[in-house]
Image (cartoon, rainbow, N blue to C red; front, side, top):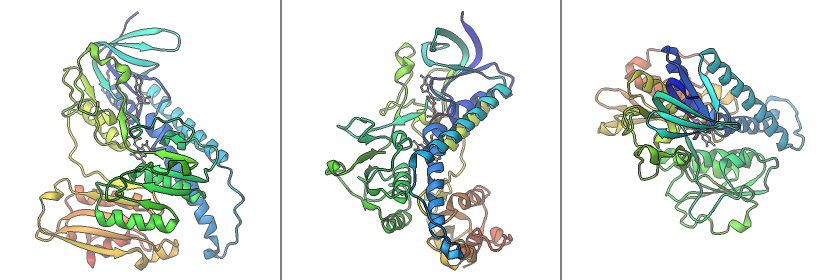
Length: 428
Ligand SMILES: Cc1cc2nc3c(=O)[nH]c(=O)nc-3n(C[C@H](O)[C@H](O)[C@H](O)COP(=O)(O)OP(=O)(O)OC[C@H]3O[C@@H](n4cnc5c(N)ncnc54)[C@H](O)[C@@H]3O)c2cc1C
């Protein structure tokens, strides 16, 4: 029997499940269809697992530096299987939390693969039956998937994806990481910290190709000091792949529209096979697309923002903070009109001059702030250093609020705190 809904959402990642909840809050009858576990890439094989492993590696680092605080501690050999088991437990718990949220908001959840029969009808292939669903509005939130490099297929043994890397049960002796973007840098940092000999190769002239050159250059030095061999402008990234126990390929993401049977509805795709959108609208009136499947953002929080905007019919013009979890992390945020400013001055401070950084044994790093010389408006912030991942949020709020140097310098920040570095830099 055909089931009727106001809204059907395909995919229960951060874009899909948030969108389903937001529509349900507007009294709409909503179903979300998910073929795997709730939470999508972010929860199951992205943000959460990487940050858990990063935290595990950081804990190891902290223990090995405990003598700096007069505490003697020994680290027993690490059983990576135990770390992965704990990571899986966290993922399971958070997934149950999403299920509870969906139930609480009266969203129907259907486990199965969705495909289009017509503009308003979906076929859902569950384990036991094929269900037909009709909905006034359909939201495509099917995310993205791991992409290999030309000529190499993931065999999930030697040639592995980020998902495989997050489920290894032993620490590899050596690893070649192809792709110097955020994911490649994070996994290189984590495995290197656990004792893997890592070579990180990037085809572009710098790591994080779209990031500030100074920040990317400094990050390369930090990784090298950690023992990671960093090679940029590397044309033949696979040249000596035989010499490595694992080859981790993290060279971008690919679209996930293959199972949607799009030929039935003629949905327009871009050259890379992502769904073509303008303000979340596709070429079909009642079909919208949000999150990674649009080929934009590729972040859980931009996907979540899409999930608000598509319901409220608006678009975002907020600055987007970016973070990479290296040791220490790097982060940046820029005014969306940054490139239009022609008269910019930069101010910089070192972590080593901050009391809290000294207390925490986190002296490595700096913060750089861009200011419009004429208006004194804060235009951008780049941080390499401890807690950059948290500090950048304050900076994002400053930029969104159009704060000027004189506005910020009137504030009091807790002492001794890392955030004081932001104030110190402004006052320099
Ligand atoms: C290793 C890694 C680390 C990351 N770290 C971060 C981070 O720290 N911070 C951050 O913001 N972002 C991070 N990201 C990116 C983030 O995970 C994604 O941007 C985010 O998950 C995108 O959300 P989404 O809802 O668009 O898609 P997804 O999370 O990919 O969800 C899409 C869902 O749709 C389902 N689906 C697909 N096709 C169908 C179908 N036909 N029928 C039914 N279901 C279907 C999929 O199973 C999936 O669950 C990371 C990504 C990776 C790979």
